[in-house]
Image (cartoon, rainbow, N blue to C red):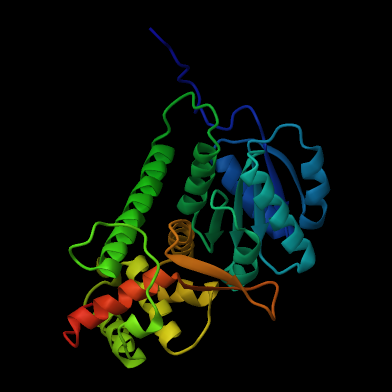
Length: 305
């Protein structure tokens, strides 16, 4: 039978170290604490400005951890874009941890869905992100790690839930008897007219529940983001990533995970801000917008939330 040593914890990252880039000494120390607490090795820690050159020379790394506690402008943007491309190319896994005020510039640069993005995350979320990043990178697994398995399952559940939403919206777009499929919204004249006040009333009603019940009982970030984007579309407003995360009414890390998946499923569309290269807007895909309008037209003034 197979035997495994029991005198120490076996980690996904036993062989290859984790390279750390940080915007300050405090940020680097914070990343080191997380990685060492997970039983992983720190290969090298260095200022963010030096990370790009070091990554180019890195022979073997299980992951790159970028810790951001302040805005470093172009140097930060360049590194994040580089990391995003490398993860997409399968060079390594990556985790980017940032403070909430950096959501917009960070989300603009990190376009690859496999980069684990954390915002003001606690210790357990940080540890889970390191495990999930390694699972996504498909590195050899020598022992089953419970935390990694649970988070991989959570990602699968998220994907399945968004797929279910996409199917439902597609059905709404074509009518209740139609087969679920992707469709393009018909001409504007055929789109049901919905007032922004109607959508705002639904959003207010959803927020009102938190006065009487624990808010986590009703957490539904996908629906909250759909409502916020529809209200913005009807009011001719643009919604940056940071605002959409607030509208989701869940921790920013969770909201960003949902956002990435909704974009992957083509329910949402990202648009670059033509006046600010460090910000992107999010809007509804045409078929998603039409499905939501049809939904509100069918439920009328019932106030269904």
